[in-house]
Image (cartoon, rainbow, N blue to C red; front, top):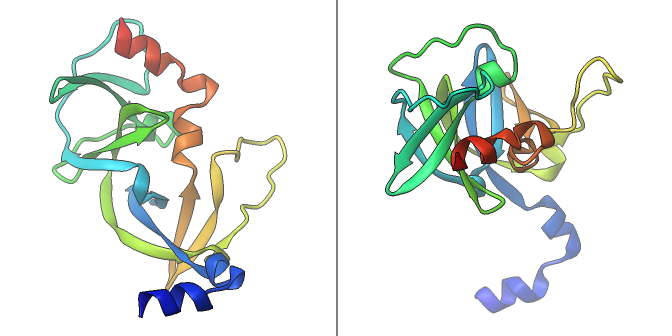
Length: 167
């Protein structure tokens, strides 16, 4: 049966194939990232602070012998004061051969989104940077901001992560 499906598949089927996304909240907004970039989800524990790190880098944790920088996405995205509740979690990401933790308000669920469900983000010209936004998806009444987490975590302004994690 498997061979039949492979033989009858077409380029159109590939285009409509769904990808899995982990959804999480930051403030009132809901974001989605590629589930394949997620290594694990952990409860929030205060990290060890690093002197002179930018405010969005909360510090580092020791994760089974790996020193992992922790980025608070609420601070990074300028979403106001970060409050740590029992729902606050750290999503451990594996991007560009680096392990990075990101603090979010809560994790919602895992969704399958087909490429045609993701609409391009509106062009806001120079008012703010949208290069990390892959698009917007609507599921029922929920609006998801689909984020290119690999591009965000490897961007120039995040290069400080390497410095914080190695010094």
